[in-house]
Image (cartoon, rainbow, N blue to C red; front, side):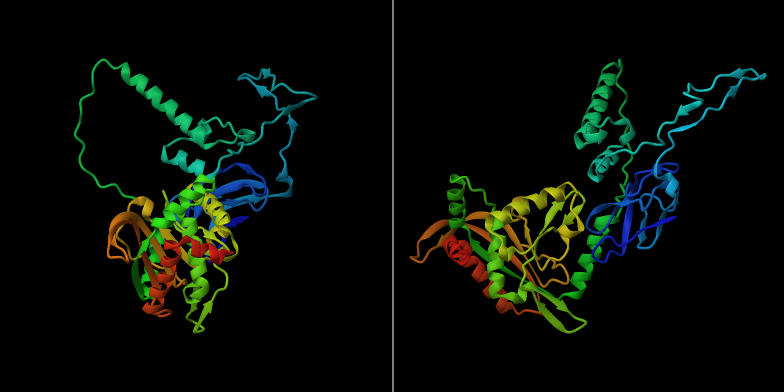
Amino acid sequence: MEVKLHDIGEGMAEAGINCFLVKPGDFVKADDPLLEVQTDKMTAEIPSPAAGIVKEFKVNPGDTVPVGTTLLILEASATLGRQPEKVAAIPEYKKGGAEVEGPSSVNGTSQVKPIFPRILASPYTRKIAREHGIRLEDVTGTGPAGRIMDTDVYNFLENLTTNDSQQQTGLTEAEPKIDQPQTVKPVPFRGRRRQIAKNMLHSIQTIPHCTHFEEIDVTNLIEFRKELKASNIQLSATAIFIKTLSVCLKEFPIFNAILDEENEVINLNDHHHIGTAVDTEDGLIVPVIRNVQAKSLTEIHSEMKALTEKALRNQLTIKDIQGGTFTVSNVGPLGGSIGATPIIQHPQVALVSFHKTKKMPVVNERDEIEIRSIMNLSMSFDHRVADGASAVKFTNKFAAYIANPQLLLLELV
C-alpha cells in the first residue's frame, strides 16, 4: 500500500518532510503517526491508513514534495491488526549436532515481544530533541503511557551537560585553543519560511499596497486598563484593539472584504474573522479569532491568549489558521515605535499594525503642552478596493474610540 501526501488543509500544494516517526520493519496500527511534515503554516503528523508493517521510505527528511507524492510503502493486512502472542519454540543446535534447549516456553510455545514499540511524543517535543541532537529512544518518558514530555528532553539534556562538565574538570592540561576558519552556515530555506516568502511575494506583486500612518492617543486607555486591573479584570490592549476594529469594520465593511478578481466582485463579509500575527521560532503564523463582532472583550482576550500559546507550542490546527477576513499585528512589545508598511495577506484587503507606545509632549485644545501616551498605527490596504480617504476615516474612528474608551463601551451595550 502506498501512503501518499494528501492536502491537509486550505489548498496545500506541497510540504516539507521533517522526520519519520517509524522505521522500516515497524508494526503500526491504523491512525498511528508515520511521519511529521511541515506545511506553509503548521507542523502535522501523517497517520497510517491501516494496520501493517512499514516496508520502505520513498522520501527523505529535508525533502519538499508536492501533494500526491508517495511517502512510504506499507504492507497492510487485516491479520496484522494484532501481534501473535505465541509461536512454536524452535530448538537450537550446537556445532557438532548436540541439541540445546530453546527459549523457556509453556506448552511448547514462547512469548514474543511486540515489534518496535512506538515512541509517544508531540511534534514540538520531537522538534526540541532534533535541535539538540537527542535520540528519543534514550529519553525516559514521564507522561501518560510513557509519553515523552518537553521537560523529559530538557532534563536529559541537562544531565548530558552536567556529565560533560564533570569530565572536563578531570583534565590536567588545558586543551590548546585552535583558531577555526570562518565559514558560512547554510540555513535551510524550506518549510514555513519558504512558504511565507512565496505568500509575501505573491501578495506584494498582486496587491497595490498603500499604507496610512496615524498617531493614537492611548493615555485614557492605559488608565482604563488600570481601573479594570484594580477590579481583577484582565484585558490586554490587543484584545481591546481587536474589538474596537470590529466596531469600526461595521461602519467601514470595505476593509473586511475579499476581492474575487476572477468574477470581478468584492465580497463584503458580515462576519469578522480577525487574525492575530504571532512571532514563533519557525516564523510568523496568524491564528484567527472567529466572529469577533459577536464576542465580548473577555472572550476575545481568553481566545487570543489560548491561540498564542498553541502557536508558540506549534500545536495550531488547520481550523485555527484559516478563513481570516482581516489581520492585526502588534509589534509594540518588540520595541517598534515609528511605523512599518505591513504586507497584506492576500486575498484580504487590509491589515493594521500597532507600534510601541511613547510619552510625548502634545499641545492640547487650550494651547497647553502636556505629556500624553502616543502609539503609532500603520494601516496597509488594497488601493484597488478602497481609497485613501476611507482609510483615514477608518483610523480616525478607531482613534476616537481608543482616546475615549467610554464611547467604545456605549457601542458594546
